[in-house]
Image 1 (cartoon, rainbow, N blue to C red):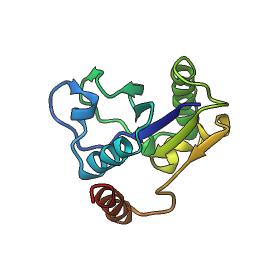
Image 2: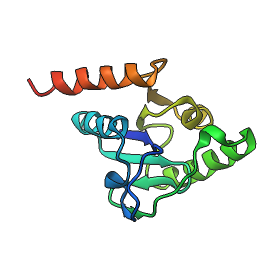
Image 3: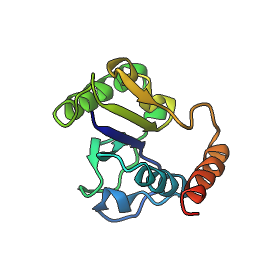
Length: 141
């Protein structure tokens, strides 16, 4: 069984094409990535509203798309694409998925996974940042 972390994209990005891990520059994304690395997963992917499932080192261009403004059918179509991309890299019924992503990014994916965790579920952005800071800090002591 593999452990896979899925981090949602954010609106704050560099203005030039970059490896995905460097494209997203918000503190929320940076803290999510730092926390994901502490978990020592087998893989970390980004859930991109434009590109679907993105590897951290994949070079992608900046974009201005979010699932938060998409209609439900568009979100279902996006999720179908992500599931297709993910199923070639993971076992959706055996592997454990850890979501560092909001509900819009999870809602159409979760029914397809047997094992998943949502460590920041129900927390507002500020609360997520605070909790991530705590979890990252307690791992460096």
